Image (cartoon, rainbow, N blue to C red; front, side, top):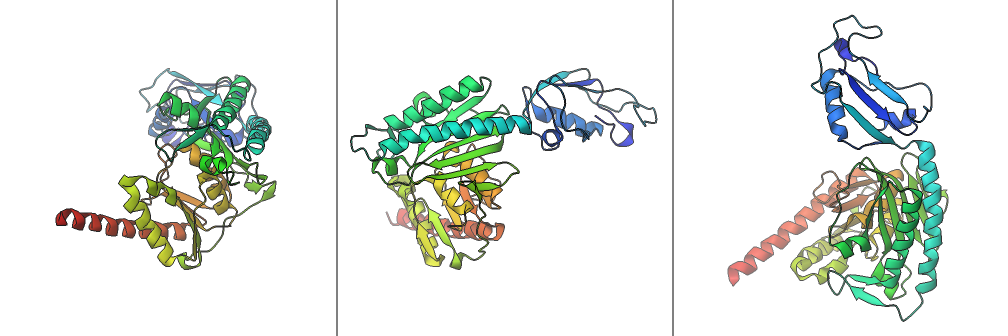
Length: 380
């Protein structure tokens, strides 16, 4: 670590890494603190210290880095200035590009293998069906089977990784916090209702988050043999061929996708239908796919210009969000703010202008709905 401006250093700060480093890893923050990373960054910033951009590509396992006291190389004496965090030690779990590639190869093979379960079962008429949150929220024996295959095999290969899986969360009734640790976010069958009806718009969705940032995303529809993949910084692909979002910037020329099936929930029915009315009024066309993950991928490949839904969970969107971003698209919150993976309200589009216009359209539709609610309440 170099000295920062004004010869300030981070006093006595030891930072140990237990996996290989490379330049991309450090520059892009691909590390996972087992204590809070922000404390280190805050201390570095306060002390004028910056992370050195190394010239070599990799460092050996167990590489140790020390932020020295005093006026180090090229310093003018004067030492310090520094941090209250004197002499503390923090351990980070590093995942470099080589390791990410190995992880990707492993999970890709596992996803394709798991897809055989869906492909063989989708035509069966005797699927065992259960409900979760309501009659509209279905789960089958195959959801559980695919998730078990994925988690068991990934946990065996990567025992320190964490998991957020739809069916596991449904069973435990607890949504885990997304930490900086390497975490798999898994939907074993997205579009379960489609799957139950043998409608071939269903998929496996799996993503890897490191340091709360999506690094790998795979969405696989085994019924139609559509395999969408992305690695952060390396583009998005459909069956190995690069894909890009549409550059259409006008709502009037856009094909939009909205999950209208959530209108079955009485408390939000008027909100969903109000937004549908607004979309229908202005868009070139409207589609409802029944699978958030695949709808996001269709934005990524330019088949549709925009997708919106509020009533989703992390496993519905994690992989698809990375795939859109790597295809040049934009994902924002329904209110126009930063998208949050752990509480997803999604506006996914090919470009920022279209996203801003959709946010305005949604807000206008909601204001009309709330006005109608007020008028109905006043009349009763």
